[in-house]
Length: 293
Image 1: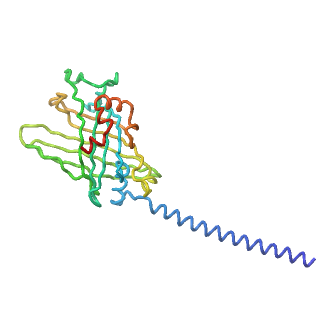
Image 2 (image 1 turned 90 degrees about the vertical axis):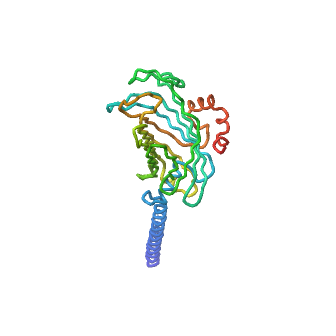
């Protein structure tokens, strides 16, 4: 009987020791997990830190490697007159960018811009437009294919826009701010310029290109990711183009759109690819050759 009681006591003691040991192991694992979690959180990029903001913007908009970056924007061009919007036409926008580091804090971006205007109803390439405000039918100059070069520093673009005779020039292109909510990160990349005549000749020119990029802060913070998946929302608010013959008619030239980034021409929308192949077949086949020419 005594032997049996001793065996039972021993089993209870061993069980208690085992439970205590497991509890200690569990607590230690929990402690280590909390440390690992804290470390993971600490590695997340901080949009309030200028160096991190630079990385967020560049990974969302461009890349840290030598791949071409493709962006499309699908938008509608409008007139804004007396606080009322009037749709004019569709805009099918393609940007293809090549990125090159200049030094630790600066990089060069060469971007091929291919933009096509299409009719709101038929979807065909727009050749003429009936201006509802002037009653005039005007020829529509499709935007020219061109390559623009910009240099970015840690806070935005280096202004290189040439001054215009008889005009004061002001250009902007700051990166940020950025916001993080959960795993979502949004980052602004607005650009624009203003040119005002200094005398009686000429007219005011104002361009505001507003871009807000969106992606995953987890992906953007990953040091192995050179170029993150991203989408954008886009607006521009501009003065009338001269060819629309609006004269002194009050109002603004406004577009509203959305877009996505990818890394091949096959990822661009079908309608943009159709126009691009038809209008610029050689560039479609070898965009890098055209950009680097």
